[in-house]
Length: 530
Image: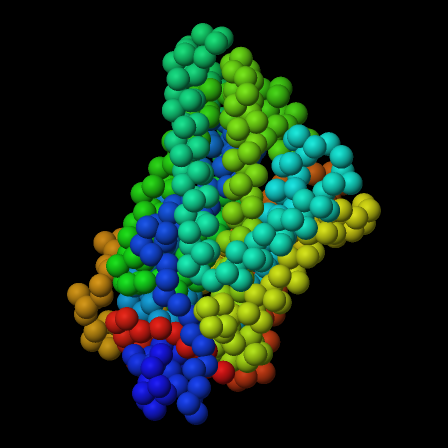
């Protein structure tokens, strides 16, 4: 910045976005760098959710719902998540200067809702980072069986993701671009491999076709429920929850708004990429897994029971081994390792940016909005890095490990709650534009699915959330620990919302007075307010 720039008056909006250089008392206060390029954002968007949910968790979906139940479950939830991303995309592209869905909830619903959604998402992201790092260390146990080495691997990977985040968003983007490329190529390769195996091209020359779809399309014995029709439905319903967890994290794309170059173009492309490519990759993968592997395969059931967290649990590896193919299981395990490490890196990024956004809105300590010269919110990153150290609990004795697992499990409904909040924000924004006489033709990105898409997402995920822990009522004795971890997000969200509402005396924003304008100015950057 030249010296003449220091004389420019600060012109900031509520979101912290300004058209000129932000200068206060002759000193640059630090700003976010719009360094993420279109190719990086698109790849991050595509591969952001391609992780253990697909490589490992898809086996549980197959066992619970059968090949047809798993396919339909992932297809249905994938379409709903795509509709949610279209709702978020409309708001993000219209106002990429805002603090993502945190600020949208504050402006379009109630400041208390922005507070609750922001802190709920932060907790979800900050707890998922150590979970992914621990998962990566467990994956290494596929080769190294010495449990005493787990802490070493956690330390190495923890230092790795902190350094990547400290380096700045430019290097973060390149790092994630490379790992996203590896994941996408792997998934495409696995889909083609399953197709070859299904057609009899494996060493066992077993032409499976749609054998398993014909013989056992659904799970007729789910939890021993009778009649079969009820067991099939409940098995399918269990897949919906599993699929929602697999797709979880897509909403984190909103955290990138502040650091995307030419955000109105890049974010529009990224949203479309998610809907078409992610859903297709997941759905095709589940389709072919169900064609190559029986839901009651002994190896699959044993792997799900062991829940080892390594490639041994992957349905792809089970297919490879039962088909007589060698070596590939080690390659898949290596990809699962890079996937877990990459996911940990992304969640550390998302948690630090969400904390920065909360601080920008005055819903978190102001110091957390401070930004380094390279655009990194250093204090927010430091706080989130401390929480990442909770991963060491997994190395402790049984009590510490149980505590870590419990903390990890209470984030399970986080994404679905956020998706409901995003849809509600869009519904109210849509109505306010009508009330204020604003035309949707002004929007740089419009979805043909609205407003019905947002309503479908809101109603569907509220129902799935309500019944997400239904299996806890089917176990004897009653599993109260699982019940608490399955539903604790709901009272947590209510406490955050009503606590802030009562303390700050906020009210629901009226449609007539709602700020539906955009705060974004082309080529501008976001400065820390404090």
